Amino acid sequence: MKVIEDSVLLHGKLTEYKFQQIFTDVDALPFVLQKYKAGEILLHEGIELHSLLYLVEGKVKATSSVETGKSLLLRFNHPLAIIGDIELVRHVPVQSQITAVTDCLCIALSFDYIYNFEMNNSLFLKDLLNHLSYKLQTSTTASRVNLLASVENRFASYLLSTTTPDNEFGLELQTTNIGEIADLLGTTHRHLNRVIRDLCERGVIEKSRRAIRILNEQVLEEMSQGIRYE
View 1 (spheres, one colour):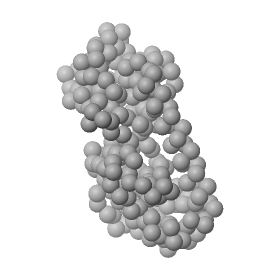
View 2 (cartoon, rainbow, N blue to C red):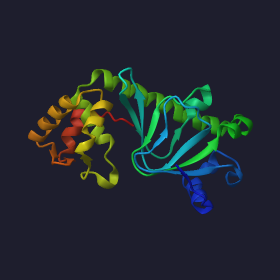
View 3 (spheres, rainbow, N blue to C red):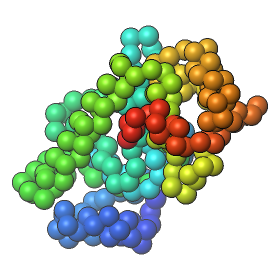
View 4 (spheres, rainbow, N blue to C red):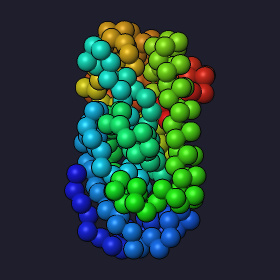
């Protein structure tokens, strides 16, 4: 993580995401702009958190560890997402590992400041409730998918969840990540490879030596049943 000392960029992000509708005199608040590189872990599960993070650029994924030592995918988060809301309200350690999928920018606001000055701010609390209820909804969906859906369905949901508007049909996954994806989807590397081979034979995706590419988004949409990890 790198702290960015750029008041113009910070002000621009605060304006872009309308922080002035939640906080009074936003330029006077002790916001800190933080930058994370793709693949960097923002929060480790179980650590004590000291700041609320607003994701204002990039994409992160939330995963939860299981008894085997592996992780299950909970959701992908896009701007404007709040990280640390449960920890703020419940006074508990970090509940999920948060990892940057792309380069990310976050705006941090310390818990101490929030406890001292914002807990009676109805606009802030309303916004926090909105994010918490959405997180509950997506966590319920992820749990249902991980427990009930087939690996094929989960993989389709994963592929569509990682697709971006700017890269709709150009999504490529490095094949070196297949083992990690299998862990996230709660399956084995071998089983996921069988699913990938089947999808390739059906012309839904294309797998080269180093990457997987989406060819037929419509079929994936049908397989995913409209469910997303986000």
